[in-house]
Amino acid sequence: MSTTNTTLVPPAGSPRADDVSAHNVTLPRVIRSEWIKLRSLRSMIVTLALTACAVIATGVLVSMLSNGAPIAADGEGIYDPAGNSLFGATLAQLLLGVMGALVITSEYSTGLIRTTLTAVPRRLPVLWAKVIVVAAAAFATMVASLSVAFFVGQAVYSGGGPSASLSDPGVPRAVLAAALYPTTIAVMGVAFGALMRHTATAIGILVATLFVVPTLFETLGGVWGRASEYLPAEAGEAMITIVRDSGDMSPGTALLVLIGWIGVLLAAGTIALKRRDA
Image 1 (cartoon, rainbow, N blue to C red):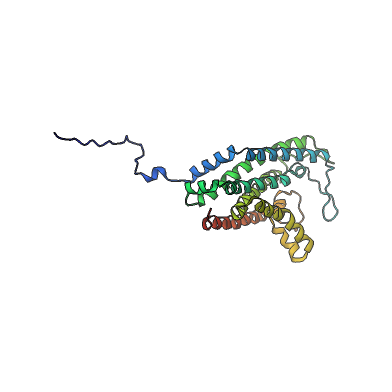
Image 2 (cartoon, rainbow, N blue to C red):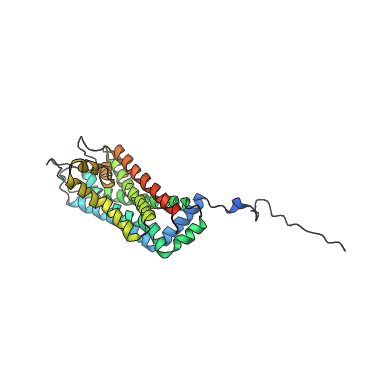
């Protein structure tokens, strides 16, 4: 009796069992995984919702209560109705920065980071995917909430002059910058989270960088006072402000300063993630 060996051939287009490329971990797949994790966490959705509500409420309230003339350092009044409606970006930077830190520190606190790094052994795509997802969520939230805050704020504006419109010089740039700046702080939060791995420590350093260090540098004065202009908070303010003094940093320079901060922090976070055990 003869025995016939039958070889099963998989249909055309189906992945073979020994085809490693069919199971490769790619950046788009890691991004999709991080997006699923972000939207499945109630705390992240609540944080984004609170950020949107805070931006809208603050912008509308400041527009209603504004007299149209904030006082500058030289004692002269500055008429900036658009800036009043965008005031909520100052609060959003803290909320989104905390969210960015939590995206990675929460995985370390629960031990989920081990599963994540086992699925993505090269590690670097994990950090980049978290940055992309956090930046996209933060920017979309800011654009939507600032648009509402601007239009409603200008509709109820109670300042000493006419309200602003998107056709006014510098206003579109200010609205875009007000959305972009808190987004960069959210990315900085991710970087601090990768560096510190501990939620309280990462958030504490972020708060100190945004609020404590600028005040300290300005108090010291001299070279420290000039150096404070290159801190993230000061650069963000320079990006958003429409009416500036002649010696103030330009929005383009301020954007480069923020990019430099992000680059340095992400590079440090990358090194920490690749060299330290989970």
